[in-house]
Amino acid sequence: MTIYKESRTIFLLALPLIIGQVGQMLLGLVDSIMVAKLGVTELAALTLANNLFFVPFIFGIGIMTCVSIRVSTAKGAGNAAEVRSVCRNSTYLALMIGTVFFLLAWVGNGLIEHMKQDPIVASRSRGYFIIICASLIPGLVAISLKNHVDALDRMWTAFAISIAAVILNIFLNWVLIYGNLGAPAMGLEGAGYATLISRIILVLAMLVWFAKDTSLAKWTPYRWFIRLDTREIKSLLRLGFPAGLQTLTEVGAFVMSGIILGWISKEALAAQQIALVCAGIAFMIPLGISIALTIRVGEKVGRNQTSNLHATYLSGWSLTLVFSILTGMSFLLFGGQMAQQFIDDAPLVIAYATSFLMVAGIFQIVDGQQVASIGMLRGLHDTTKPAVIGFFSYWIIGIPFGYWLAFHTSVGAVGIWWGLALGLTIASILLGVRLWRFKVK
Image (cartoon, rainbow, N blue to C red; front, side, top):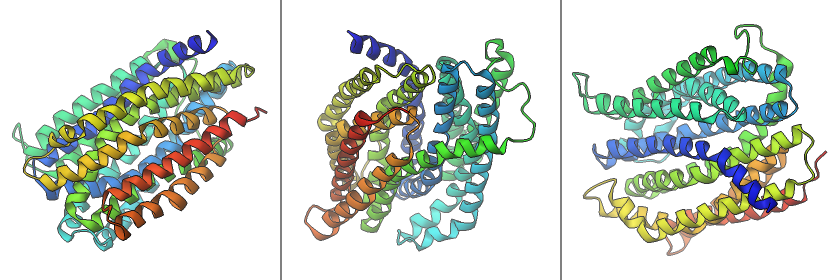
């Protein structure tokens, strides 16, 4: 019964997080469908730019998980002053990280055309890449603020604001990509500007909510614009930097798989975008549960209620398993039909995407289990060892194995995804063992 009650508590905590995460991924789905109407080349250019963009973005998202970890633990201990300090300084940190990544992208933009990609695809991706990287700055600030209120169990309002931003982004896509309502038809670049504008408005909406909601006054900064606390920044980075590296090892492996598929053909690269969007939407369910688990475990650690943590572990794994089976079956049964919804008259792209989704259906279970374990380890403030496990699983085993299958056997392009599946399986096992044996200090 303890596990049932714990599972119910985690699910109720995770539900708005899952809906919010799925909503964000649906934006990527809409982007892909709307850009795909411009042709295979434009879709491949979107994929290439997004693959490169996701490297700093996901790294930044991983770093900002320190907010959920610190706020949930401080809230569990009843330390409102620490919660306010984390909120203010994490916002500074997000601004700094986003700005540094944007400047690096600006300087390195010309390198895209030297990555052995289709020359036309590489050329078309550069303008969109710079615009989307500018959105890193408001994007990471928004994630920092959302992580803060999520850890305070105020998910539903944050969810509503995020969904409103998604709807705005879709509307701006329609206006700027195709030139509706008298706007110029900007094509791929229009999708980038739509994302940038919607993320800026998202941050402004979050700050207005913080200022107007009196129930948040205790937990949000009384004053925002004061000198940053370098000790707090260092403390956040000690937790967040290895968490960012861990996230980067996994997502970076998928990014690298896209680059490798670009060496095969632009059709394989376009298919990667279709498969990633579909698999990404499914992944948002265990990711939402993982974030809830971070908060749940962090609160228990803050309250010194660590005697029944194993019930939380079993509950988290069980919940994730149920949803992973459902999403895995959907890919296995309907992967082909999903791929056909993205693009017309491109049978090779659809064939590639269908084969990728078949593999995604198979690795759903291990993918869900590894992200659930990561969430609980973060709640225990354990972020360094999971990063090492991720690097070993994906970069030492998964990517080399997938490359070998793709280029040295008859398996072909889908071999890259089989390599990812192997990496996820190894990570799932090693992270699960570490979590179960972890000793709370």
